[in-house]
Length: 239
Image (cartoon, rainbow, N blue to C red; front, top):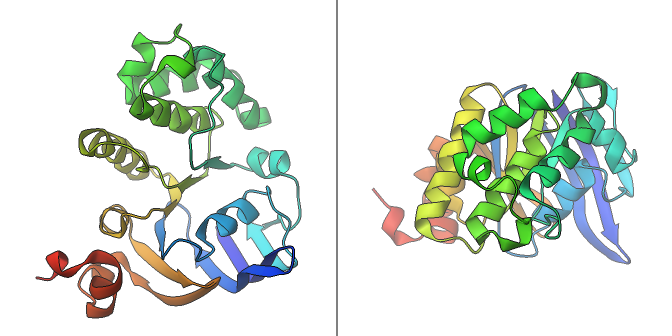
């Protein structure tokens, strides 16, 4: 479904993503873990079209996406839930969601089916559909950011730090929803500082350091890999 070959992205003179290659199948859930500054967010932003790569190739469902603008990537079905939510606080919950439907383009006849699915996934958004998004709690804003992406009928969902700044109860609610979406066949790439949570929610994982992939394998195997445990999960994760 998604193929990335020798992808390099620079910020000025800094190489943030350095010759990365990866492949994921349709409907697969993939984690990307690593320390701050490893290049994880840059990779997502390059896939989504927000950044133009210096070199390399991105192909999605046999369509070349390298260097295409973000709106064109979104219309192919790759939708991103950015770090920090980036909702429109001065618009209502429903207005935010309906804006998200624009990414669906010809892949949807109208927004109402998607709207009902989002409200079923996050009932609190249905209760607050007429409320200004800026008045929502952090957890509700994260649900809204995910819901807005879902309105675009994604085939692949890119999630950048969905647990950031949220309490444990809300994090659990968000990840229950993500797992439900994945069980319905939605593919995901999850960038998450909580490596244990990321590995529990996915099937395959890549470890990034200094812009490169330095380790990869099944998420289940990584959860018990001494190297991953020591560097990313902590001693408490040891069996």
